[in-house]
Image (cartoon, rainbow, N blue to C red; front, side, top):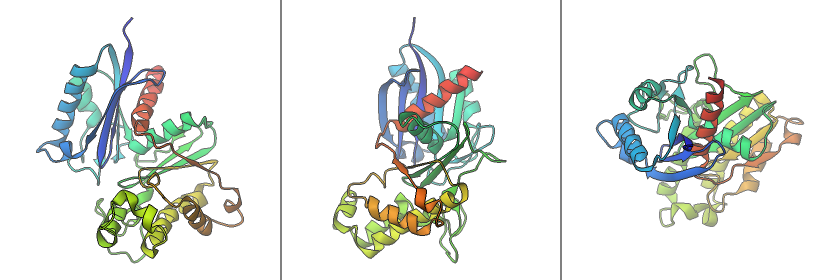
Length: 302
């Protein structure tokens, strides 16, 4: 009997990751590429399709059951179309699922990348599906996923959970999404990169928390990250709080100060006195495996 796989794809603003996953979660031929090989082409989506085709021709040795793709984007409620991907040029207003299903003749599942990251973390940490679980993933942008009683919160248009795009009072800076004053301008990997360029270019960016975590500009940055997190905690009073992403996993990231900032901003006495954090494992494979888990669950319902 042939092995049966889901092709899991995790497309990020900086890198995209791809791999073939069996239903038991075993991952094969995991590959990381720079997202620039897509975005710098004349037709990013065509380059994306071509990459998938070449990958499958090279590595698939069995039955392809589905393709499951996570994007750093707002996605339509029917999970077919990308509306807006501010950190990934060339993918706005594309019906991803329809085009890929036509090309590869298998079911295609599309969702926000952070939903797949949260699914992976919930499985790895054995988190019960009942109750409210929130995930905050600070990478190139500020990602947020919300899981309530067995389902991801989707909303009327499918675009719930855009926490990185809540407005900051009096800010006049333009966000990549087209709005002015989004918190992601100040609380994201992109923001940290600007801080590094202006203040710490004598040091490798991966080392800035090791050397300068007590500097006022980095402490302000940590506080900026904590504000949207505290905001959502105050609204939802979640059972589980998962925090991850490339920024939080940087060497020397000041976890204690970060949690102090969150505590400062959340409502007292509760939820402030009953906050428990689960830190996402720094696993580059998480989005790919989470995407596959989601697809296998959906296939069983079809």
